[in-house]
Length: 116
Image 1: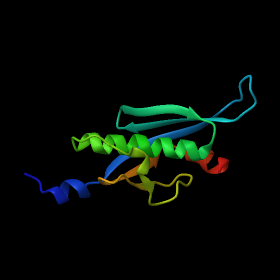
Image 2 (image 1 turned 90 degrees about the vertical axis):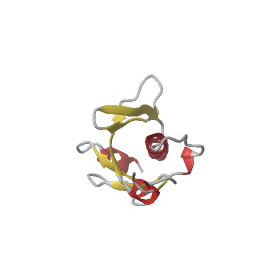
Image 3 (image 1 turned 90 degrees about the horizontal axis):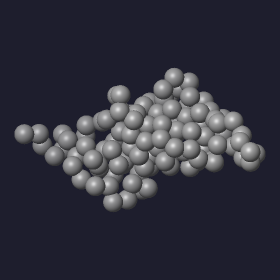
C-alpha cells in the first residue's frame, strides 16, 4: 500500500486549450477553454475575460485532483498557480491536495497570454 505522502506528491498532468472566439451579435470578446486528461475532457466553457479562463481551468483541475484521491473538493476556487501561464510553457497548480501540471495543447496558450 502506498503511503499518504507518496500519493500527495504524485504530480498529475493535464492538457488545456484556449482559443479566442469571434465576436457574436454583441461586440465583446470571448475565450473558449478546455481541460483534458489523456483522452478525457474534464471541463470546457467560455469566458469574457482571460483571468476568468485561468480561474475556470484551475477549478476544473482542482476538482479532478480531489476526485482522483477519492474526496470532494470543497473549495476548488482556492487553487492557485505556482507558475504563470505563459505561451507554450507548462504551469504548476497547487490544488490544496496536491500539485498538478497544466500543459498547453499546441500554441493555444498564446491567446490567453495575449489577452491579459
